[in-house]
Image (cartoon, rainbow, N blue to C red; front, top):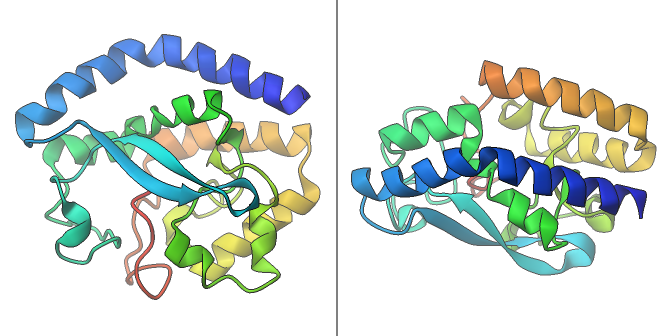
Length: 200
């Protein structure tokens, strides 16, 4: 209950503070690339339940059916100029706060994945679904997309087994450094799983 209260208060406050930025992005995105400024994708959350993740669109419309599909690499020509800025600053993730308010996500937890990835989980890795997925998490602040797929899952499992308010505070501090540093946005050596990692 305390974690849910933290999520509601934090998400509500951040949405109010970031509303001008989100509004500006909603107006600017269609000016550069035709289509909806909102990107929606089915992801897997708590207990294996699917939900619709909401983000700001950073790629051309229909990017999932073009080029390398779900995989996103440095210099990917499907990413718009504005999209590159939104990704580097993680502004594209701000609409995730709506998912937090809706109860599908938490502020802190493993990043939600697509169903095709979950199907490849081992029984142990399915433990990653024991908590709500988060906007930021232990794997996000310890290598982000620069990690291999197994490394990311191992870090998320470590967090689930050891999560505490102390660890959460550490994640939040590191998140600010990671966001403003723009580190490990993409993998240099291909996708983190055999069919590409999600459009994180």
